[in-house]
Image (cartoon, rainbow, N blue to C red; front, side, top):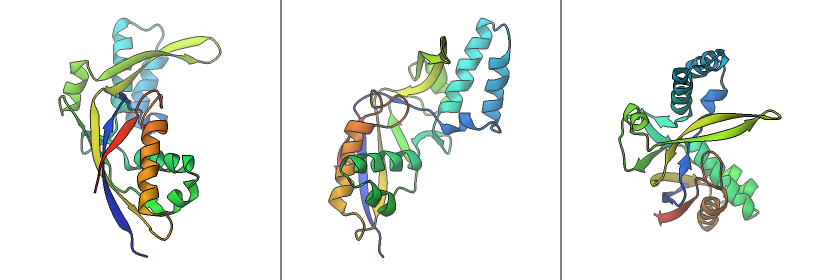
Length: 191
């Protein structure tokens, strides 16, 4: 079976909040740093600032040191859009996104400069446990876009349904953390 491809350009309609899965891995060095910092009692203001910084760096989606949209996140988003169209199983079986998409935004390309800039972070109180609240820090991109290629098996899902699935995903599902209040997008270009 021959796969066909579609090149997409998506443009964010709401800010993108990143949250990389690496923070769930207890063997990851950033997760270990975060655990060491959060277990300290009592915490100083400097400790809270360092927790925020480590959490921000640990949440970044990176490819070759640059912010990106992971292929896995794009695929999961597209499959979610296909489910709205009652084509979830077809998309899961016939759709593939194999390369991360470089994130396009107006700002520093160096991640240390992104952190120092301050415009690319989002802090919010979140409920943990029954009554406790803690602050979380996420990488935030207000104006963003990306280009990527999706491949599909026409015998399983047709081109038009792939396009419709991604369009639905952009409106109803979004990418990143705390969606669909964040991370929604429009499909602007299809080749």
